[in-house]
Image (cartoon, rainbow, N blue to C red; front, top):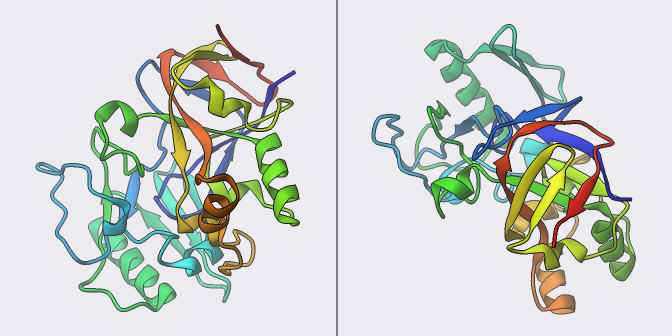
Length: 258
């Protein structure tokens, strides 16, 4: 039986995952607070009023900055603040509505990644949009929910002769109990996840962010290139568009519909 093993959100694009005990999904929307904030890479100026989705290369993200994986972050919903801890013991508590605090976080991140940027980064917030990788494709895709089949991750790891940490793929829903690669055949089909009904709208292409070890923050694999060589593609996981909302939790049954 296919069931949800774990649920995650990623409040800040490129920063660490937060496990969820349950999540309430609404029709046409993604996981609440998922990719709600991001850090620009200093090459452009963010304006919330005129913002249109931009590619992930315009943000500070794992594909270019592996050091981000060494930061432990947690968003406090009740206090409306972001906690950020670095390996050297430094800790920030950032009120996400305080401009000065957000500027402090931007400087902290720039120092931590120690990279040459075109300008100072900015910690920015989405108002009615999310900073997802596929937001540039459409509003619907911006609000898609990502799903990983753990059986597929194990199959790829076995083929490559190594264990692959599923957290490299930064998905919202991790499913287990299915067959390897079966989710790739669900494209354009409906699935139920507990009481949620969704449509599989896209297979997920993988970028170099998956090369970063989420535990060590080292770039220790070449997953997209290796997958292209072995399978002729670099897709792993799928995106879902929520058709009928509801609340799901680990243990929820995942069922593809005919």
